[in-house]
Image (cartoon, rainbow over all chains, first blue to last red; front, side, top):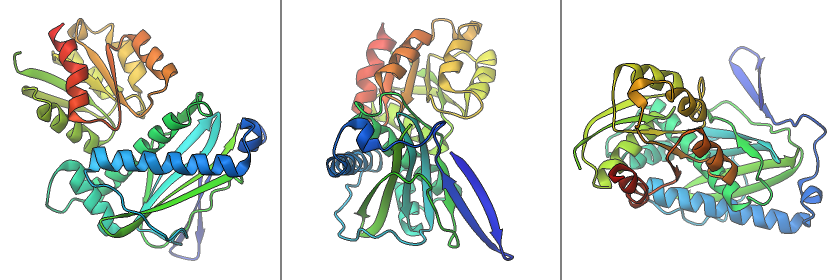
Length: 189
Length: 126
């Protein structure tokens, strides 16, 4: 996963996350021999189930449904995990500040406010576990797939431009009434 | 079972605290818990400390968990100490790699205290 920072003006930072394989990107659907719609549905279900498992077991709060599919232009926190191998790409997890703090507090089993550093750490682990659980659910397509260590971006003034140009899966859920978003951009190596 | 001295190795401080809490929730009595955020820190700790159990993540910067397990084989204080991997990387290849490197067990994240108990008690009693 390459990360590139470009300064535009005096205080605006544009973060570009790109996921590249060593060779040309291959269509994951063609590579798997599965129709694109079917694969999209399977990956969406796997991501949905992975997130549900992680929140139930590690946060102790089940995720709720959401009918808002569109991603926010900016979320307070974005955690990212790179995938490399059979599947190449990026899984991102986005949420607002209040959700990040609540998730971290619940993971730690404490009631008081947690630090921003702690919230970043917690979201990185959530993203990491969702990616691992997702991978296990599509193991026939991701047997040789490695995960990167997590990266977490916080702030208000950034946008993400994944350059994978492959299959995009978006799942939005609610955590204690607030929206959270997960996006998976993948292609085959 | 006597109270345990445990080393928890994970680059996430939140996860180290969760593992600590889960061990206690699983009914294990801990006399001392040491923490390290990567394999290099864990190796340094093991040069000066003896523990009853090592729980380590795999995917960490600086030195990953698999390399840590390999290098611990040359550390006197680590001889006979069970090492259990706690990681999101739970594919068959990773499990085989970890066990052949010298790890005695494997716990997949996310985990419950019951799963911790189920995997650790036989190891600690054996």
